[in-house]
Every structure is written in C-alpha cells, then in structure tokens.
Length: 311
Image: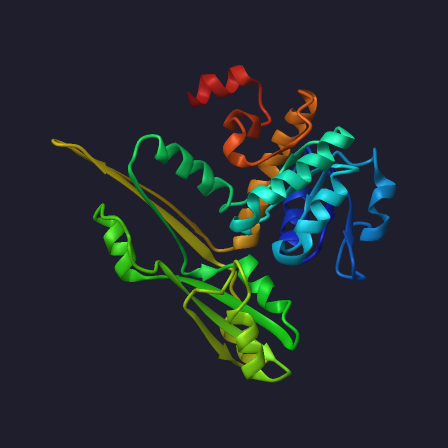
C-alpha cells in the first residue's frame, strides 16, 4: 500500500513511524504547509499533493479538525482515497456529506472520524447500545490532541497542553449503573502566551465545539515549565454500560490506557487503511465512519483465517 501523509505534527509523525515498520506499506511522501526538515522521507508542499494522483493508494490526513480536516479531507478526496481522525462531533454529519460528495464525483473512498474516539470507542458504544440501556463514556485524565490543537490556533498562544479530566462523582454514578446527570468532565489548559492573557483566556473559553459551555480552567505558564512538567501525550478512556430488568442486572466496562495518544490513534488509522482499500475493491465511493465498517475489513488476512482464529 503506497501512502501519503498530510500534516507533520504529533499524529503525522506517529503515522510515519508506524508505517515505516509495516512491511505492507510504502511511504511516498509527507505533505505540509510548512517546510519540514526533521523527516526521513521526501517532503512536499501540500499544494503539490494533487500531482501525486495515481501514485498514492491512501492519503492519511493528520491535521487538526478545527481548521484543517474540514477543508483538506474533502479537497484531497477529489484525488485520493483518504482517511482522517476528524473529531468535532457536532459537525460530523456535515463532514461526512462534504467528503462523500468528493468521493462520489471522483470514484474515491474515505474513512473519516477514525481514531480511538471518535473511532474505536464509537464502535463499542454502538454495540453496547444494542444490549444496554445506560451507556456513559469518559475521557481522561489525559492529553486531548484536538483540544490542544484548538488552543494553539489562538493568536498569541506559543504552546499549550490540554488535559481532559473526568468528574469523579460522575464516574461513580456510571460505575453503579446510574444515569449521569451532572457535568462529566472539565478542561484543564496549560498555556504559554506572548500576548494579553485575559483576551487569550476569553478566546479559548469561547471556542465552539471544544470549550464553550464547558468548565475550563486555564493556567498560564512558561515554556520551560510546560516542557518540564507537561511533556506527556498519555490519555485514557472508559465506557460503562448497564441495564436492569425485574430480576437481573447486567454491566460491562471497556477501558483503554495509552502512554501516547498520537501513537495509538496512528495504529487505528493504519488498521482502517485496510478498510479503505476494501471499499475501493468493492467500488464503494463514499465516506464511511468506523461504525459502518465490518471489523473483518481491518485485518489484512483472508476471511477464512479470521473466522478460524477469532470467531
């Protein structure tokens, strides 16, 4: 599988590292708006990407959801099969429609909103919803790539890290099989800034789909302190599911812990790249999310072998 990578932040670097260890993949190049010097494969301007039409099987879209993927994924779906980790939940249906239109016109295929959440956790919530009545999902404590990226886009922000922190009282309710009616998370932001901090804090708290309407704590610190105390990319997530009838109680718990959020997201993207190729083989020229894709498509193995060993 010949792949391209658009964007060379933490996620793009993780995709490159894992793809180079995969004997079934060849990295054709990295595409970016900026000049890249710390890369061991050919690097090109994103404006030159369309010149590689026919030379790349799957383009991995590794930019941020807020400003990059909403535009870049449908644009490049006009030339390539694409996969992205778009995570702005409120805009998911609009994004699916935009990418699907490009795929339909260009006979390309796309898997979007793919990562651990949305993505893997979405699949688990879908399955749980068919059996359980109460399903509660918690993220953290850990570094959110999307929220951190959204902060970094604010004018005057030099660097930042955003921790998503679960409300312990809400977690306790979910563990006991009770509906959660209180705020489930708060946002803890560590920000390095070079402009008016009051204005920057106000802008961060009002970013729609990320911070607006949520409890958000902002702490301004130095670059030195950020590098020393917040140099992690760890994250975790939990899904608690339960249901009751007159005689029985049923519960389930799904948990993921990761020392590197971008590396785990990259592993999932690489798995779903197999699904993108399967869509191409079957002439499915549209955008699908992980909840619509058969799990067997993720494995680069004959169906009989999968059934033999995993069923």
